[in-house]
Image (tube, rainbow, N blue to C red; front, side, top):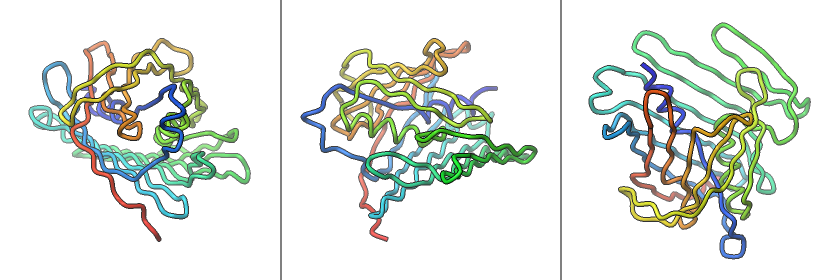
Length: 244
């Protein structure tokens, strides 16, 4: 069953808009957001995403995803994904990435450590270790979302990122399609609709971002062979920046 992978994929995507004058002063703000994940008419999971920021520019970006309802009867998987690093001149610089997939009988853990002085990233799993050279601006799979949000805040209409993933550098591109009004459980929003491409392959993921919510994603849809998966915003709470 591919539920866990779909929950993670839906809980980790994002993006942008062409407006510059109105939102030019926007930047990242700490928050805690809750999402509902559905397949067709069935709710199959929930995701909680938190962003913590310090006054010194350090960040902690974390997502926790788990099945709910009938899906929880068949799968007990829990997925945690976290990126830690710092933000300099509105640019995200990841230092450490952690992925944990907890199953009833085992757990898979992946960690990445970025060595910016030597322009390398090291990956560690239970059965493999690798290291590769990376260019400046490289992101991990989760920190790229923060970079995308900052692109939106700067009013950029196109974004592209090199992402360290599985011993390879993969290119993620985001293209604006149109503006669209979206209604979710959390409210109605005027959004920017985008398509995501990985390594120039046809897009399977569509994303909707709300400028009035500091460009948080309010809806993410992913098409797979076994059906369409959708993640929608349920609620968001804005929190204070950590002064420590």
